[in-house]
Length: 343
View 1: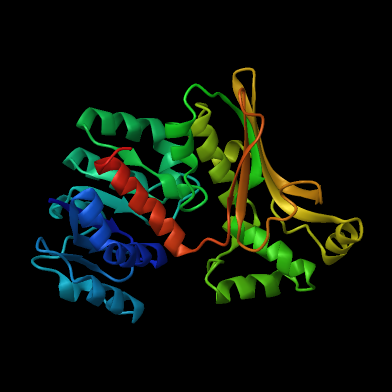
View 2 (view 1 turned 90 degrees about the vertical axis):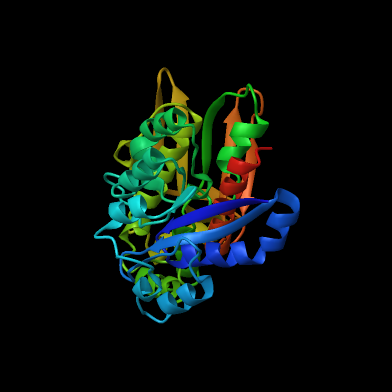
């Protein structure tokens, strides 16, 4: 039986969902993958950190964070001064980096992943920042160290977007893609169609855990832009930053515009596009009216959808319906299993 030591940076909704998923899948991991696991360290920005080489008590860690208390009471030994000190001090085989995204620089997540790889750990993240700001550097470092850098959960949560191209489309050249990649704005626009203002829709999104305290990353198109940049960088081989994507959010969409579109049998959607041109990529995120004949028309709620155009497959679509932290957690689990049990 292979025992894998896991280190978690970030223990928010996704990190806790991942811990619960590991518990639920323990028997399957042992019987089908010959794998046992233990979490040897958890570090957070607001709830302290805990290191225990024998394994942190997962149930107690979840309870402490969800009650607003500190993880420090679970720490065995001295508490590291900062996150990099935590990574250096924590015994582990694989680091899961789930800190909040930084659209501008990708830091400090990039430094966390670099530190883990340099220490000899595999590195997995659900954070889009490192993919668009340091994909080549992290990939090369992982190769140099004989480890892997994985990031399936960064776009469309647990849907196998990157694995699809990595494993099942050999020889296919990606020419472009179109989709709805920000599930939050999709929900907001749908609520506004029913008569709510943007502020009211945002408050509803916050009540179900979809919108952040500062929702501008979604509303102004930054989250969608960084996802477009990630897909372009990894799948099309042309690095893009979110600042390189032509971007317009949904603040300008009014109830009158939504009503006019509905009357015409159309809907407003925040549409993501990228298209390969001569040596570059044209990429955009902007609101568009889509007709009932478009596959984007029926994408509802917090669902996401992307259709890829390749030189051999003119249209290959992937729909993810109503994802949540659990689906993102599955992407982390899939990355772990693909590292240790490649298929």
